[in-house]
Image (cartoon, rainbow over all chains, first blue to last red; front, side, top):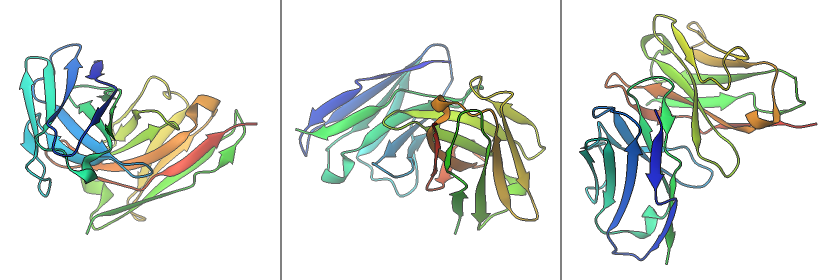
Length: 106
Length: 117
């Protein structure tokens, strides 16, 4: 199953609303996770089952699904949110990740 | 507190072998599916392998037949035996614990494998 993540990078300002999309090549039900990764660090789970916020993650992060399209939204970008973001499907093996989105400061 | 600590990364020549370790604490590797994920320098994440509690294993096509995942319950440690290494295997290798809901909350800090002559 291929995951096409877009955009590959974006520039935004603090306070902006940011949307990242992940499109699956076939149905994966809700078996999708979103991760944040900062340079030199391991990924951090933000969202699982497409829309469930992991405990401890700020509520400005949210996830949604429409068919095979999945969206990660940051409602009001904060300085600590400048990082890389990845989607991952867990429907079937091999587990796959999207290509990633780098969120940079404008 | 759950903790995962990888070790064993090194510089190795093409065709060589290496064994990575992932020492777990705060839980028993016997009771959870455990996985390896890698990240080439400046690139995205790539799933490598998983071992089930019942010892079933699965591999990415890119490593099947060359890599082997295992665990030592007495040492509470996960392993990745890597043989016939290629330059494209150069990456930071992370181990991760799959929660019972199917998702990966706990990750190690990673260990760097460099395959180069």
